[in-house]
Image (cartoon, rainbow, N blue to C red; front, side):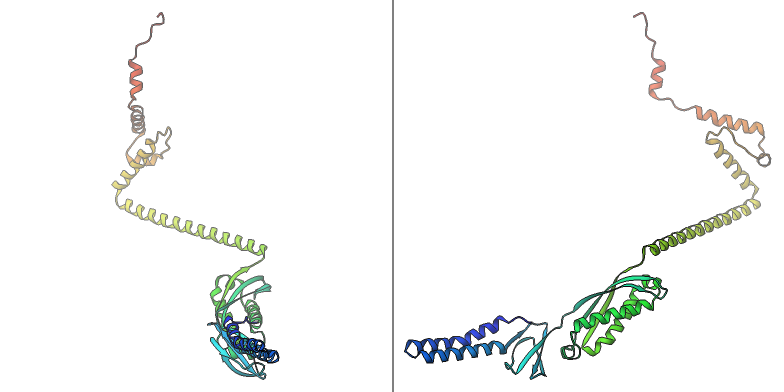
Length: 315
């Protein structure tokens, strides 16, 4: 029931005040019976004034019935009705209203049980239809949304539901709005908040996603090896046409291998013949690199230790 407006109470009090003054005057001048009648009349008029005065808020529309028939809509602001003859059964809120609804263990098109939570945004655009065409329109729109959600889930694959929520939201909005349009209610939007699937299926989907990522990684690795092989093939064609470049490249590779203080380097004899480098040359190159590695600059502390005189044990 809508709360009584303070302005209506104030107006009823202002109506009762003159009758109270007249009743008091009659009692003072020795006419108590007249004073009581005036007081009763004033009380009745104040009650009727209180019942006839209505104030609707900015977002409210009021349905007024006269002797059970629709008379008019009122609001927002101050308005008056005829007490007893007129009645106000509905105060319609025209603001945007949110209604949450869900479906549990509903089968998708590929027979997967899911739990879906959604929220509906709607508003009343025709207060007369909302009051007269459907009983308890708020409950009716909730049941309509839940039924529409169940139908959409049954026609949708699980993969589409997980990746294409925008399409499902649009379909739900069209279905619900089609039912509620005749009630004077407009559906603004529908949003699916969460889709829950069984734990076992969730683990299986996670394993499938991991296997797919591993497959993509192997494909990328294979493609990289193919690109490297193509570059090697291109380099080989370059060396075939330029033996001097091949000789310099072989020398550089051998030098890099010996520079790492390697004690053993296995080189095919055909490579040595190509490089015109015999066993003696290999040994000389290895010794030269070893000698360079041993000739390291000594630190300042080591030099001081060598020049320090030994102490005399007798002292």
